[in-house]
Structure formats: C-alpha cells, structure tokens
Length: 341
View 1 (cartoon, helix red, strand yellow):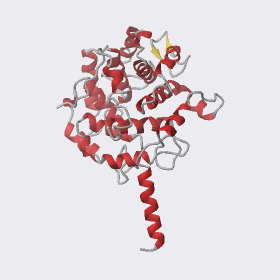
View 2: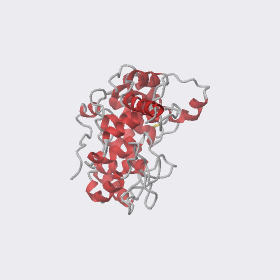
View 3: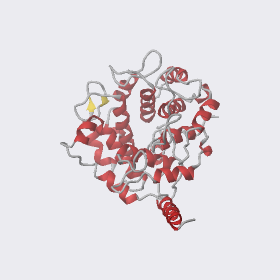
View 4: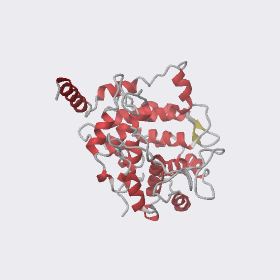
C-alpha cells in the first residue's frame, strides 16, 4: 500500500469511529435554538402551519436524550391550548388555524408528555376525531381533506392516548387498513397505491392499536421490510432509493412491531444515523446535508426505540413515538407494545 492509501484508510476509520457516538450537547443546542424562531425568517414562514408538530419534535428530542428540562413539556401546555379550535373540537398547527388530525395528534402527544391531558376537553377532542371517520373506515385529515393511512394512524393513536378507543371504530378502520396491503407485502396511502415505509409504519401501528395485526399477511410484510437496509447501514423507504435517517424510525419501528427487528444490522444502522450529525448540531437526512428538526427527531427515535444507545437515550414507545415512561405512567392509556403472534 502507498503512504497516501494508508493515510486515507486510517482517516476513514477514524471518522467512522468518531461518528459512532452522539454529540448530545450539540444536538440539544440545535433543538433549543428553534424555541424562539424569527418570524420574518423564510424557514419560519414556510413551516408556520406545522408549528405545533415542531414543538412536539423539540420536546421529544430533549426528553429522549435525558434533558427534559431544556424544553419542558409543561412550559408549552398553554401554547398547545391556544391552538385549540373551539368550533371543530380539535387542534390546529398554530393559534387561529383550523383543526387537523395531524396537529391534534401532536397536541395530545405534548399533553401526555406534560402529564396535562386534563387541561383539555377529552370528550370534545375524541368527538372531533371520530367525526373524521368515513364509511370505508378511513379517516380524513379534517372536514375537507383527503383520506389516507397517515390520518387513520393519527386518529387511532389520538383516541388510544385519550382512552377513547371504540370497538366499532377499530373494526371499520381495520377493514380499511387491510385493503391497503399490496401484493409485495407493503402498504400504501390507500388501496392499490405504491408501498412505502412511512405508510407501512402507519398501517402496522394502527392495526396494532386495533389488535388486528393478524388480519394481514405478516410474512409478506416482514419480507418487504427486510430489504430496506442499504449497504451503508441506513434504511430506505422504497426499493432502489437511498437511505434516509428518518426511515430508521419508519422502517425500524415497523420491524419492531412485527417482532422482527433482529434482522437489522443495528450497529451499522447506528453508525449511519450518527454519521448524519452536522457541525451546527442536529441530524440530517443523509451525511453532509443540512440538519432539521424532523430528521433529528426521527433519527433519535430510531436509536432509542431499537436500543442502539441504551446508556444515553430513554426508551421510546414503538407506536406513539413518545418516551415510554410517559405512556406507562398513565394507567388508562393504551400501552401494550408486545408484537402480535
């Protein structure tokens, strides 16, 4: 070997070793700086409608790395309540915005983490969510929006966290979700649409909530998911796509829900996710790209849920994507995460 080859090899090995761990302080600082966004900033303007979900991402990240005091959930309860749409009964993405199931779910996740569900009208929120279910069992995002499996998962998870699951609601939803499984074993946004790991998670988690995982072809689902790990250790969301940090959660959690995450090379996945760290803090979709809260959240969630860094991260619930302790501390909440047999 030439001297240059040896230097390059040693440098590469050094980078892989150093990126196999998380810089927690840098991650926390990155999340913290999003607490007070500049309202004339283009990034803020483009994401303003998703504000409440951003709050959930931030609180979760600080909690899962063992520093909940940096962004205490209790601090944001009043902000969440300001997003309540009194006419509809759900939550909008920001004060004054119309209610939508995505932000209603984020609001409930925050309130559970803050141990403050009693600060909102559980009956009104549950009525809003149940009112979004259609005849085929699917759920709309709001009164005018389209139906797909994302909204069905958010609706069922919200009802589960509120302790308002209804057998008839679950039965109709389960019937719809079963139809969304494709011949390749994956799931799409609705029946006969492309299989995608994001929709796979939504459908499997929703079916788990409904205790109906045994109604699908689990063997085919496992085989589709097994093929999602790439040569670099990361996971992708569809065949022939590059790995992306967020699929550590969508694909990893799906395998976990099926009791099949042992097929993953978790050490390789950990190295990939840790390689997504950026000098300014946070995690990106791919190495060298700009970090954001979305990928920081789901990258940390994947590492925690798959127990890749047990000494540094708090356990995460594989259905609700909040710290497990927040679910188990509420006796009325759904918390059975054991894979169906």
